[in-house]
Image 1 (spheres, rainbow, N blue to C red):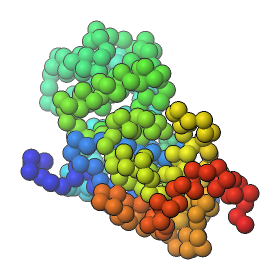
Image 2: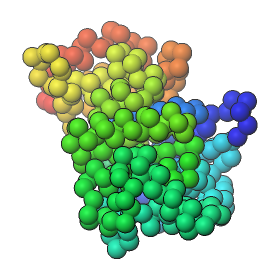
Image 3: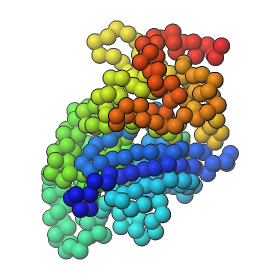
Length: 345
Ligand SMILES: Nc1ncnc2c1ncn2[C@@H]1O[C@H](COP(=O)(O)OP(=O)(O)OP(=O)(O)O)[C@@H](O)[C@H]1O
Ligand SMILES: [Mg+2]
């Protein structure tokens, strides 16, 4: 991409995808709009099952056999990936977009030496000798904080943190402009998690890649991502600069997420959002969050809200986004959510 190219690195527009299930297609992604600039970090948060991994797999082009893209575009460096041929897709995978998966254990082949796996990835995409690929592999391992001589070890000889570092080394092997990371450190203790993110940030300064980070951990997003996207039931419900979104959410679901966190220095108990996500095989006709939203109006149950600009750089999918400042203090009260627990009345 030329240096003066002002297009976003990744631009997802109107993306909808579904999984075939015995009960019919499950709408796992619905009208996803998302942009990621060069060198930018975007956090993707939302409760389990909201579609975070599905979105990453769709961008990476590694969806399972029962998944299909129903609509929309994924433009990477200005080229659409949805309409790309399998060969074009393969060329982008790892060299253009790489992925660090949720489970590092499954991502490494147990019967191959760690170094050989990384070297193979390099040899598959680059015209280099085996010796050069091996030298590069050792360099990559050193970069992520694994002693280069450990390249000859098998995955089971690595600790969990080392395996995760090896996966990151593999993801960076071809210096892709975009790295997708799906809960890259969830299985690790906070100290190791911290070290890994510190090396990721250092590497980012050197290599300049953009990061799309999926995590349950809001603190990780606050520390590492300038922007955040909040997902609910297959949709983006809110996006914006991380600080603004956390400080002043523009969507009731984000308000609920914030309440559900233990608050530092506060004796207030976290408040969980009552209920569960909707059935994706038969999603509600209006807002997907309406059944769990203490502020839902009849309109919310019949008309799906669009992801609309609510302030510069900020978008929210809520009919009541304009009233959010008045609703936010109510969302901080447990009784607001208790009323939902007792059923809509
Ligand atoms: N292969 C599949 N076949 C059918 N449904 C699937 C498949 N994979 C995921 N789903 C469904 O798609 C929805 C989104 O799943 P996904 O794994 O993307 O969620 P997630 O946000 O990554 O959750 P988590 O935080 O638990 O990893 C869920 O309802 C899930 O049950
Ligand atoms: Mg997931």
